[in-house]
Length: 219
Image 1 (spheres, rainbow, N blue to C red):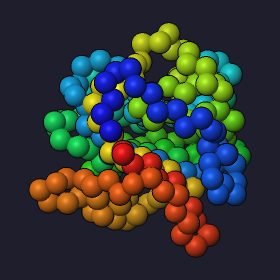
Image 2 (cartoon, rainbow, N blue to C red):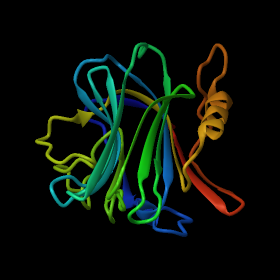
Image 3 (cartoon, rainbow, N blue to C red):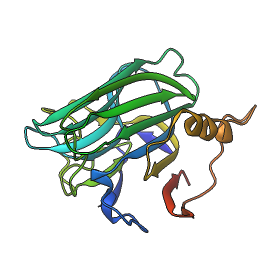
Image 4 (cartoon, rainbow, N blue to C red):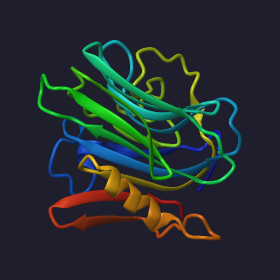
């Protein structure tokens, strides 16, 4: 799907209310996967976000700051985690996986950022026990607090400097588990097709045994 800098893909639901949800995803480990290509590497643009910002905001996001890819998970002033990497080849589609491995309350949590199947950065810490609250989810754009476009998940303060993506997104997936390196590599290899890079397979919600993941693909 082509995003022109003004398009919006707001799911209109919180992570907890996605079809087939059995648990409160905002308080349990999860993984989000996105395949995208920016039109350029200039500007502040949103790839994915859920939750809110501000001192009391709970939220998460994947954003581009020029060619810097950033993954943030914040639980208000209680704790926040940030992982980032510089994109050296953004002229092709990129496969990005962001993992929040949430342990028990009071035990360290960890976020991990992968690009094209390889780990690029990690960050661990305490106090990040809620990644979104009950707030909406946006793909390539803001969703904010119950649709409030002024909030960006994972940021303590954001004055609107991050805009809708100018580029392409072919896939977005959300998993109710923290994928490990082997699982991430398998996802990347399953999508990588020589000569065509990545293929979309339509919009679907898939149940895999007791595990569930949600798939959004460009029409």
